[in-house]
Image (cartoon, rainbow, N blue to C red):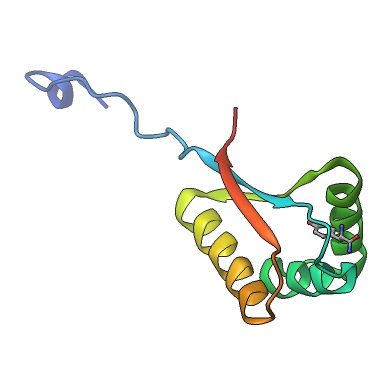
Amino acid sequence: MNDADTIGKTKTAPKTKRPRLYKVILVNDDFTPREFVVHVLKAVFRITGEQSYRIMMTAHQRGVCVVAVFTRDVAESKATEAIDLARRAEQPLMFTTEPEE
Ligand code: TYC
């Protein structure tokens, strides 16, 4: 860009800011069968059975586990989709979302 391009123009910040990312968090409960949790994780988050099993066991042992991070809209719709699948199967399985850092 030469001087002729910038004269008289207001400086604006470069539009390179990335959107804030949101974590989708799997929450443990005492009722949902382990296999059903794995099924939901595979179906909604398109991850392997092995990854799903590890995430499920982490939530089972520690209370919660981050499943993945997405932009806000995607995180919220994935969490809603997963909760809906559980509701239709009459399971209390719960997911939450929260912003990173
Ligand atoms: N704790 C459940 C059980 O023992 C399994 C489970 C794991 C449920 C993770 C929810 O997020 C969860 N049947």
